Amino acid sequence: MNGNLLTIEHLTKRYGQVAALDDVSFAVQKGERFGVVGESGSGKTTLLRCILGITISDEGRVSLENKDITGVPVEHRGIGYVPQDFGLFPHLSVSENIAFGLRIQKISLQETRSRVETLLKAMQLSEELMSRKPRELSGGQQQRVALARALAVSPKLLLLDEPLSNLDEATKDEVLPYLRTLSDRFGTTAMFVIHTIQDALDLCDRIGVFHRGRLLQVATPHELVGKPTTPQVSRLLAGIRQNHTHSS
Amino acid sequence: MIDGFCLADLYSAGYRSNGDSNSAIIMIMRDKISFLLIVLASLLVLWFSVPLLYALFRPIMQPELLAQLFADSRFRGALVISISTAVLSALLAVPFAIAIAYVLAFLRPRGAILIETALVDVPQTFPPVAEGLIYLVLLGSDAPINLIGTFAAVLIAKFFVASPFAIGFVTRKFRDLERSDIPIIARSLGAGTGTLLWRVLIPLSLRDILGGFSLTFARAMGEFGGTLIFAGVIAWKTEIIPTYVSRVSAETPLLALAATAVLVVFSTLSILTFKSLAKRV
Image (cartoon, rainbow over all chains, first blue to last red; front, side):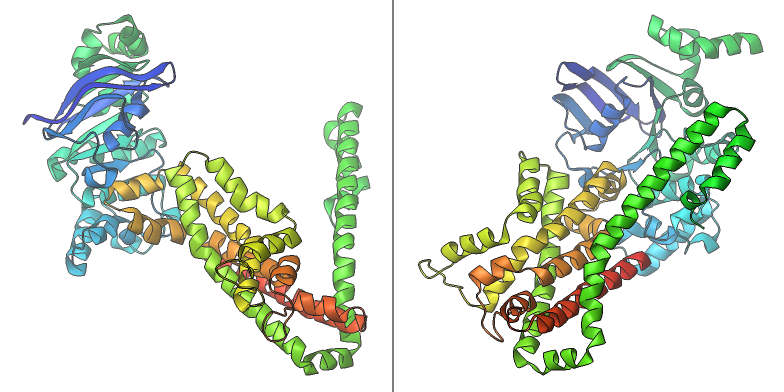
């Protein structure tokens, strides 16, 4: 790893009396696949929104490459986002979706076309899909287009909200290789917000476990399964460890 | 045949499929309710369609009435003023509707509900005569700008009662879009407010914009009270079809009916045209 890309310091966000995020601090290293795991209401979504810049925290700081971006608008953060439902623009074709950010950067048509073709190839999407509308694609294809669109503008950090939860097992297997190789192939650091601990263990280099707005533990999948530091983490891992014991 | 009208078949189907009398009674009750709903719906359709069809077909049965109507220069003037002010009201309403919809849905200012109520609900329930009276004082002979008896007065009176349709349509759509991830994704790809509007929000709201435009046009075509009080009835300047109808109805009611038929045809055709356009986008 090559140092910290994203640093979160004492991030706190309250909604009335409830702390959605309670003094959260951690760092994501360059090129890492970092998983944010927790049950509903654990603060995962609020954290994602704070990093993306949609929600402003009450206290604390978000830094990208050591620059404070806490007050920087979403469009100037250089952070890509792939939501759970992929969020493809329904009125645009596949190629227009992928080229959306490139057109904003006023990149020439020729260069845009070349980058779109490269990304389509990288995501193993055939060129005949270029003119299709998102509704004409399968779930796996839609997710790969959403990934290609986010990667087109070379974001420093890519946030993926529940990237596997909308997919059936076959589509999961289709998409997982693309998610696992994001860093190697595109030089992108990825942060996954994941509900299912097993998906996080399969996909991430390190995992941060959240519970009621607090960060309980940050560890590699191996460390997490071997040494959970709190009862809540143990509970979250209970099913997994049982399987792990049975299989070993 | 419509489901609710083949009750006997449905009842027997209920008996056959379920076998027990309880579910058959539920089925009969359900279809009795369906039958009642269909009767009520048909009554409502009759209630609205009979006068409209009468207004439409009575002049058609007497073609000389239509000839007499179009021979009247004042009617032709009223038609021109009606259509031009209605089109302008609708055209003006669209950019304003987009602006206020963006502010209400995305910037969510304090008092957004109050603002929306004042812009969408109040003008639709406000007595148009009172609206005309307000403008008469606000932009009348004692005010710094006197617009009484002008084309602008017709436009202002129509815009007040008609633009809420466009505002309501676009605001509802923008609010739906705001709740989705789409604007956030556009922003994360570098889109500022202008790009977000032009390349995402407006294209995705085209149906609603067209719907708002067509209803604003149709409502503006029918506006009467505000225009009468504020703009008056001046041939080829402020006279519109509704005020023409009002003026001629006492002496030549059938001519007024023919003018009403023209108004109904224009409004209905415009709504149908924009609905079919909206289906294509």
